[in-house]
Every structure is written in structure tokens, then in C-alpha cells.
Image (cartoon, helix red, strand yellow):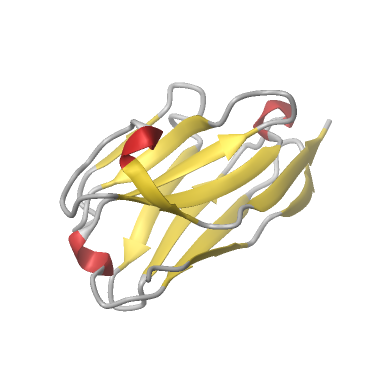
Length: 125
């Protein structure tokens, strides 16, 4: 059973930075692409970004491109989301997730079957 545990959320002012972490259990972390998603109050959960298994390829939603950066440390089974120049509209619960199939690199959250519990990010204006 895979477990994903996010950490690093908090309350910050607009323009600040935060780094989220996602610790994964299991020995196959390096075989899977990983994704970050978020859900703001009253809105549907949306794609934030993804990273391929080796960490060499990333992809971001237009709303965060140039401000957010995803990385991973396969030796530590940990995924990261560096968030810079935060805006109030970035306020949401942030989730890391793993897709159903190894080496499957997708934005479609329906293809992700393991999810963390989420970490709250609140950006004040």
C-alpha cells in the first residue's frame, strides 16, 4: 500500500514563497511520475504540475508556470513543490498524487489512484 504525506503548507503574505514536500512510502517511487493538484474553496480540484519518474521532465498549469517548480529526490522518496511569488488565488489545499500505472505521465487526475491527505496553503493579500 502506497502512502503519500504532504507537509509544508501554511499562511503567508502575497509575494512570499513556500516549499511543499510529499513523502512517499514504498520501494517503487522512482518508477512513477507524480503530480501536484489543488482545490480552492468552492472549486473543483485542478492540476498544478507533474514530473516524470526521473525528474528530468516537468509540466505546469498556465496559472503557475514560471512561479512554481516541481522536483523530486528518488533516493529519499520525496516530491517537492517550490512555490514563489504566491498570490491570493493560490490559496487552496494542495495534494500530491501518484498515477495508477508506472511511467504514465499525465495531467488527468482520473488516472491517479493514490493521494495524500492534503496541506493547506493560504495566501493573504
